[in-house]
Length: 221
Image: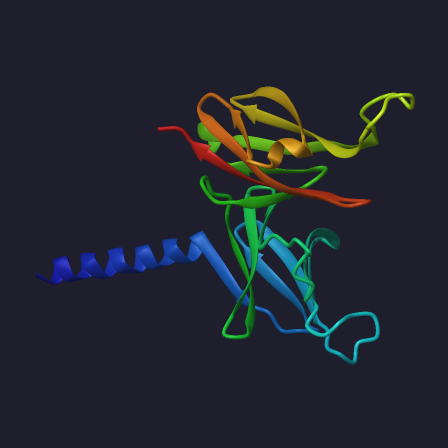
């Protein structure tokens, strides 16, 4: 009986430790630099919450900067302007970083990158999902903004257009394949068949000096 109880206690403790290792949820203190360790990560965060007295910001703006060894890796900027697109989960290496607010408390949640969960990837960065044999690496290699007219000047009723061409690199089992698509193809989402996986590109947020695309990587049954 004692052995059974000890075994149950051991399994409960092991399960608790494993659960803790799968996710780290850190309450953030506005205006304070915090150091967070998780697995092989040691990152620092700085959350700035602006009010109506802040000269360069409207009431309610928040900016969270996350750095690794002094280098910025992701930023979260929450604007009271609802037209501004902000992604709550962003990818860094083989991790997902999520900014959330619960009961007016701001949190940064760190987890291993997961299949089946939406995340945003910044250009010139990559994410690795899965481990070893099952690992899939996605790199957002480039984006090109294009604009102009769809016909020569002498044509009647020609239309002005703007579009963004995106380029991704996907590596599975040491085989790398490049993919290219346009922003207008994302209206109904854009699906890429990777053989053993399916990559669904959900949306984009191009800016003058940076760009983010949101996606989900699913494993096929």
